[in-house]
Image (tube, rainbow, N blue to C red; front, side, top):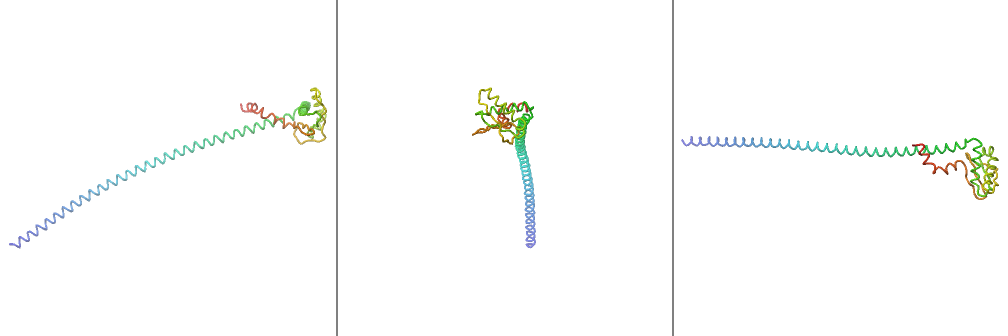
Length: 212
């Protein structure tokens, strides 16, 4: 009788332990499932946050890149505009120089009578004592030497000045005009010097004509 009771108690105990184990296992499974679900939700949140941050960072990078590109473009435009202005200015200076070179050429190409009278006036204006020597280019000396000397002395006499200019036996390598040579000083009245003398004065007017 007592053996049956003990056996029954053992079965009861084992059954209780089994149910407890099942309960623990069930609770454990539920907790694990809850933890897994929470972990999945957390991972999703983290992934979403990182995706959002990555998107924001990408957007910031694109925005900064666009701003830097725009700034670089503006700098390049400024540099290009400056270079263009420099080039235009250089071209204007070149054309201005060519205009004065052309003026010198036109003076050399005056008809003989006008050219010799021009040299006579230059010689008279360059004379200080009225007794200097007139130095011409080789070509001008051969063609106009005496005419220029006589014309210059005539201008000086008409002005009531000493008129003893004489033609120098030497010549000067120049493209036209005359050098008035005295004992202590030479006065350069070449055509190149004449054009250079008036260049600063006439440049604004020539510039206006060329680039109006």
